[in-house]
Structure formats: structure tokens, C-alpha cells
Image (cartoon, rainbow, N blue to C red; front, side):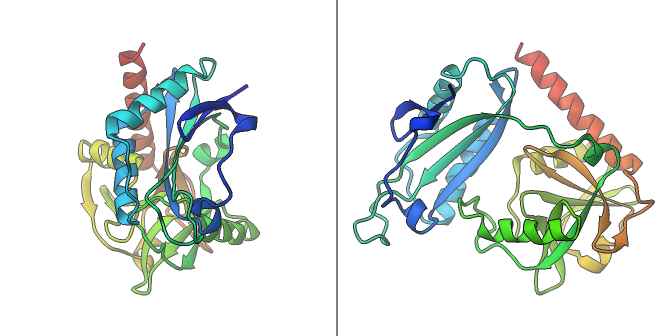
Length: 281
């Protein structure tokens, strides 16, 4: 039985619960983060905790736990689940119970869940995926919030068009990010990624660091009309890694297959994973 940490206690997953008057239930008010493990070790643990804090600050949610507290709770949750070497760790901070069902009372709850990783289709990486574009933006792009209604509807629209992801486009016609991913494009040997109005993912940060060793890197606005003319496009995320994009709406990208520079990024990321696992044996 999987063990979760819920509001101060370690409990079996089928017994995990919070009160129905919590604002995360009533109003979707809360923040979250997700990371993964390799050989039972959390990958970029401290960076994810910092981003959780940042998300909370952006939505006005005060955290009574220190970074050290949260770190220890995550590690203890992993100890309670010794058979999960390759796992997702989901951290949720709820808005807490509210007497009037609306006003935060400064009593957030902390939840840590550990679940097995479900591998994504290998064809995503070997052949690439199709994405669509949608004219919308996230309300608080700098925060990873618990409300995923917008993303869920966007992905439903994408599925109807045989696509795997939806890319948000703002009123300036700038491509921003996916529902659960950051966006990158190659123009010859220049790597470009949007830098405003996006959630700056942990994998995004790593890709930028790796990219600086191999290419010219630019963080800047990326117009949709420029994006669809890119030589290569890919998306990134904690659970996705690097996924090549070969089609956006009805426009084929480059040669319609994963490009050589994207493959170099994938190889660099895999080497980073390998080095991490070697270090943490």
C-alpha cells in the first residue's frame, strides 16, 4: 500500500483525506509541484521546493513550513515507500479550511504523494508529436496552481485534433508554453525559448544550462508566425523530459521529424540523468 503524507500524518493512500471545507476543494485555491526520483533519489529536490514557495507567494498563500521542513517531509514520505525507485512526487499546499468558504484563514495543509511513473509512448521521442495552438493565457503564469481546468479543457481540444499538447498564444500573437510544458525552438543553431508569461520549469532551467554549452541561447518573446517557421521545436517537462514537436496545427515543422539539434539536447539530458544516478548510487 502506498503511503501519503497528509496534514501532519503518514497515512495509506486509500485513507488519505482532507476536510471538504478546504479552499482547495471549494475554490481551487492551492499550489503544487511535481518532481521525479531516480533510484529512489529526488531529482532537483531543493529547486522544486523553492518553486513551490514562489508559487505560494504569487497567489498570496503563506507557508508555515521552512524549506528544511518540507524537504524532510518529502524524504520521510519516500522512506515510507521503499519499493518505489522510479516515482513521481507530488507536493500540494491547500488553501486550508475556511469558515465562510471563501476567505483564507492562514491554515494551509501540506500533502505529499508518491506514485509510480507511467512511461510516455516511445513514439513521442522517436517520431515526435503534434501540438495545437490556443488563444489563451494562464491567470498566474509564474505560479503552479492546483486548478487545472484551463489545461484540462485545452488538452481535450488537442485530443480532438489528434494532438498531444496545446500551446498557449497571447493577444500579441506570442507563443508562450504548453499546458504542462515549456516551449523551445531552434533556428539553425540558435535555441530560443519564451521568457515572459510562462511558468519557468525546472527542466527548462536545466535545458538552458545544457544548451549554453552547445548553442547560442536566447530567452525572448517568440511570435507564432516565427515559431511555425522554426527548423526544430520541442517541449520540456518533469515527466516528459524533451519531446520533439514535428507539427503545430496544420504546419509541419522542419523536415517533419526530430532534428539533429533536438537529439543533441536529448543526449545531453540523458547524460545529466546518468551522472546524477552515478553520483547517488
